[in-house]
Image (cartoon, rainbow, N blue to C red):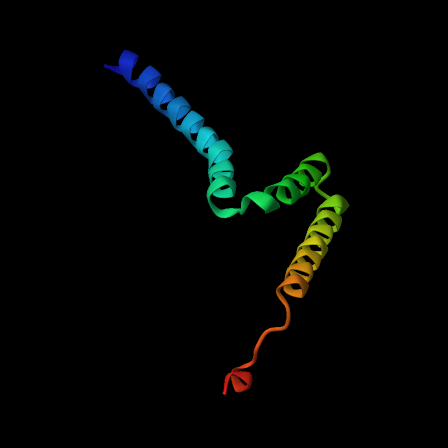
Length: 91
């Protein structure tokens, strides 16, 4: 029984570690595919790439740049849409 128990425990631990690593690799991709709009995926990929290459100062610069790009895109979209009507303007 002892001869089988140790390899079985080792096998279970190895399988558990492999499953956790696969989940850690796949989960961010699934989140990006399901929750991030297609037109914003390129910017997110640039931020992730900046984080992977150097996790110190480049992360903040990349995040700041992505926030500025997002704000500029929203501003352009609002300008194309025109002014919003306030509640008092409806009466």
